[in-house]
Length: 68
Image 1 (cartoon, rainbow, N blue to C red):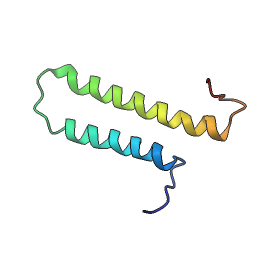
Image 2 (image 1 turned 90 degrees about the horizontal axis):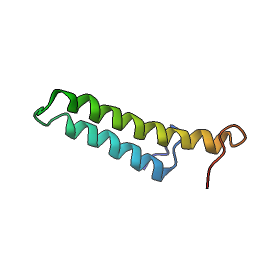
Image 3 (image 1 turned 180 degrees about the vertical axis):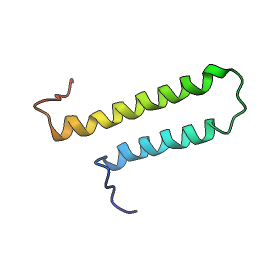
Image 4 (image 1 turned 180 degrees about the horizontal axis):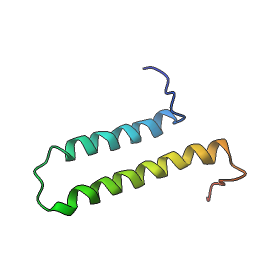
């Protein structure tokens, strides 16, 4: 498997890839309510932001400390 170049660990990358897969599969579903698409997309983006914050916390712990 090639090394990731996006700053994510392998495990974080698996989560991010799963989010992308989840969106792609959701997008294939028949729309049942007009708000569902934007709501789902917003949740995917929120999850991606959380994963992205892990890079900041790891690379810049002084400004973005981890909360244990």
